[in-house]
Image (cartoon, rainbow, N blue to C red; front, side, top):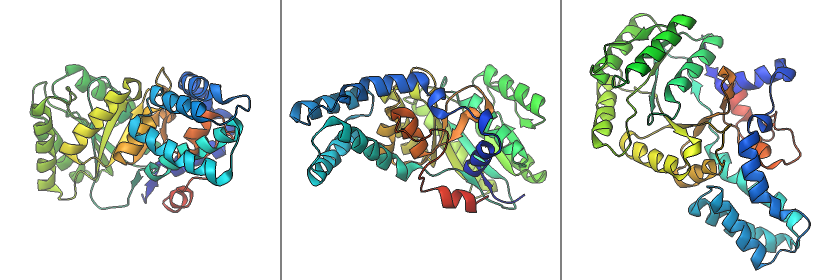
Length: 342
């Protein structure tokens, strides 16, 4: 079926029917309000740039969940820009801040691409309960389906009957095969069986759910490591993507979760969900600065296409109202690669 690019599909969908695509700033209304009004509101009115203004900006960044590390990087860079460009008022500082925010996110804008290969592409999905993991799996599967890829799901969260049932119900509704066993079964065994089945049926993509107990429980990490070892017995390169789903509303705790899972699982991508709710938005910058792991997707609503391939310029524009359309990408370094990998 060829290479599949989530980003290219997203942009093609926007191009085909612009009216049907809700602008990202609308999807992020509550997050945008918290971030923009609190963080950027005090910069209005051509205030002189002085130590007090810069200190207030630093405090607001930290309060918006941007985090100490990312805030320090932003403030250091802003100080250099202010001196180099001889900035004198808060209006120019606002524009410079937007540029710094985008520069911080640009390196982690690395959309997921499914290559054309003879064996199933395995996506292992991890994360704590309540992060939106199972829902994210369903949306990923549907987008792949709509893009012409065959998909199979593995119900590897065998500790929660609801998780197994949710995947089975979703699979039945969308004609996607789901490999599952009874609650309490060995998760690695379920996912191993799923990869064997997917290989036999020439499935393009296998998406495996996993248990989602608290990241502080060592038993969970040992179990996830076992899943990786078992998959490698069938395909030494599997899983091809290890994706963590994080609830953007949990603030710095999401960063802590990502660190713990990354140490155990060597994550290759992030999904930050629930950014359409009351999340402050700044956690996206904190995670980008601290970990540098590609942000593959953001969750900004209930619809299938509200799981968006992450675009740095589009996200910053939606949060800070740069005056460019948040419904388009605008200056992304992934433009060329996204189109080439269609």
